[in-house]
Length: 364
Image (cartoon, rainbow, N blue to C red):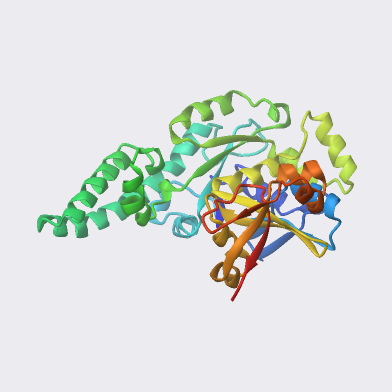
């Protein structure tokens, strides 16, 4: 699962990616690994992991990760191959969620590709290109489905109706994520189309230092414009985040943030938000050898969670011993949790909660 950073040229995308790629921006001990020049695996800051480390004192600690992709800047006409359009659209199609960076600060020294600062216009530029690409996909699919629908095929008739509805909305400038579908329509038809504008999106308003805490007029306009998309909006002073990464001492960084009225770097908030955007959650294993955060999809069962460790764990699953994070933190150790009768034994149908501390029993 990976999230792609998109935006027009010169809005702060690459600076943001570089901030995420710098361990100092996130925590005292969060490393970063580059897979390709524009792809990185970033650890998810999690205070619960730090607390478990303090309680268990393990030999090593392994945080959860999220994959971030810095996608080439987009220009008008990308849907027709202008600029790096084909590369942009190909890369974004391969991601599972979109982090859309919008310039929300005025600075005459930083040239805007369209000559002036207007995040709503910038958003619409990218939206239109993605919608045009989706429209092309839908129209090609419609050609095939219509032939089957004429024969009276009920499934084809139902699919044609959905496709025509999507086509109408895209032509009206509405992204697929903003269209209301039933759960059955999403699962049986829409999801299979893999449309770009159906991907969940997180908007990052890149502001200057003066607006890092409360935002500005540009940010308010963005929030109003995306109200129908059920999308999160984050305020981030990317330039200030870059300054934080230049500080070598962790305490200096904390002092810097305190002076700005912030409790933690905005990049840490962004990483956790991206993790949530991808519909991911964390469970923990905690022992003297290792304390580790494991990534699973929200709604995963205990066997599915076990399978993330090893496929044999899922195949031979017997049961799971589960401690809620709150109980582990409250009692301070697994032994004391057991003494208090707070350890639960769960079977195959157990839905894992975010933060569960788990042991799996299996047989192969």
